[in-house]
Image (cartoon, rainbow, N blue to C red; front, side, top):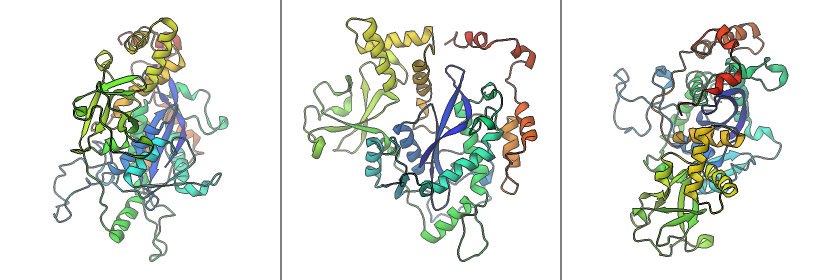
Length: 447
């Protein structure tokens, strides 16, 4: 697994301005298949890395209009049942294969070696192998993938800014009208349609000299040699990838960083000492998502089921609320009121966002992460309709496995493709007459 900053701008759905994006991917070393990915604005957190790792076990559904060769079959079908391949497909399939990792190779990034990721790997039985310092070949395949996606896909998209100042245009942010979820959809479809079915020089079989296989063919080759992959199908598997915190269960519930949670799942456990030992002796593990603190979860040891615990101010928020947003709201309320509380801080922050959305860099960063919170562990069945855009359709058409990848020096053809993209709703003259301030002035009037 690794994270890199993409050489393309994305559009902030909250402030309608361009932002830099980071891409986190998980790659199967044997097959070079991309088994999980996630785009995040500004910076990547441990919860984003855990989400990508969860996708390795439970792949996302494939897009509605993906070609048949790009769709992987649903994992978990009975192996003793014969399926007619010519019959109508009743399931949409998945965007990639499901695997069970044994070793996780990461760099020394703080998000990968955090307590959150270490606890997830311990629960899932994954050993962590950090790469050697300043040794790029320890993660050579994933580093090569980052270069491939930049040269074959990103450089042909609007908003491409290149790895340095000599590789970009005059104002690449002026062309960035792809939202972050649209860019993620484009990358996922390119991986499924092109990357997984293009032969790689490093995927070989020593018994067949000269044969070069694609990641999809290498996956079939590995399954034929090693057998069926027993991936877990637990519907509550996503809870295992949440961030744990050890707390005592009191008569009024549990408390996390000054927030009180309560629910029916605590009945019978209040004021009880947990059976866990060690540093967390007497405490219970409480799992939560830092990007949505309105609900936390506990797994009872008697029935081994998960139960939600609601925040006492959940009804006042009525939407996903991040941990960073609450800390920022408390800071603002402390500077404004003499005796602030969480309800007053939340109400004041929501009113601030309603009146002047995105008035500071902190506001924009927090609101942008909260806009993507609903996609943390959900499965998006309906993908944004971006494959019909001229630039995306051109890339998918010309980057077929049997064609030559787009060359980085073909500047004339790329300029023509990028120049055809215009924002919907007007012509060039109309947008030239409107300044940036006037254009974004009424963007959030109806919010």
